[in-house]
Image (cartoon, rainbow, N blue to C red):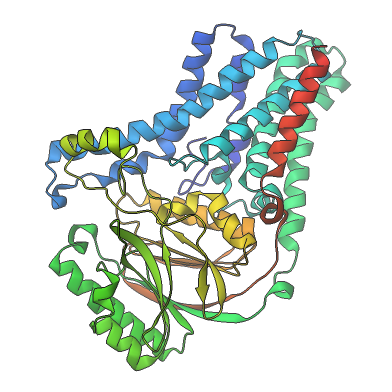
Length: 497
């Protein structure tokens, strides 16, 4: 399963990768063994998929000693791996606990009951985990950005529609292997093994049907967006050399895009690493905007009474601040300290890193001269509900701004995959600007119209479209998980009566 997410892209393995664990749970009665099995599987998946986190090392450019740097990187990787593995452990223990309380019967009905429980429980847990501050590697993202047909299912009930499909097919294959020995007739065995294959083909066929639906009919006004990928390494970004390179690179890029007659220019997360008041106080970039009269979405630091924020500002051609969005989902330990009153002093002693950004409110609306936009800054791309809320409240297109210079090149590929899934879920055109890659343009079917090179300075102009459609997911949220849970409870109650 760990080979499925970008950049490996072996998404087809996800449809069989859960079979060995599922089969082992059935054959194992010891909860100790179940915990060890699920922990191993979870660490294998999340540990491999998230190994890019170790790319934060070395942090010697920040004044962090080499040994402390690698210790911090390994701690982050191990912690987030174990957090993801905990989901698998809870699933395995819960799955065994529930199914053991139903009298074992070697028939199809019992097998289907186990599959229903397995699918429901996994979806419930992913929903719970996705509402915590630490979230990234849902089973659904193993299919993005390459399996575009299956991504269309996210329009129905969000990412859990894909997760449910993956667990369903794996469960049916596993149950077929477990129960085939009880069927003597060859025809029944054939039915047993062809059913999951037929369902997998059917699911993908339905996704293909959704993928074929035309986009053009629901496109409204066109918006020509210019994107600047500044390519400023973190090693210099927050120092005088980086400041000068940022002002020069983004000012030059803005001029070139303005001459291409774009409607607006999009810059990455903290593209100009200054307080907004300093930028609008007659900086070179600000004067250039006044000269060319083209609005810009600018990543910079905002200020509040409590501290400073990671923000995206709409700067009009007249030099007015039209709107502001403050990043609301911050990176734990990277941008803020969880349980500050308890852990703050301890972390300050253990780590030389500072994490003291102020989060924005969760109900922000980002108005632009062209209508409401859906905004995600970096880490927020992993949180489906963050984009759904904004789409439901009238967001007509998506803009995301990220840095992505912290980690290895695997992370930008996975970040792009997250934004592809968000575009499909909400049925919106998406413009992505990153510092070092991958910037891009994505259509509502998840097609990547353009993707930048990695670790290069680039500018690009392209057209996205405003849309007002609302998918079933945007309207009703993750209703599929609720139905699966209710059905599981009802059937469990019936078989135990």
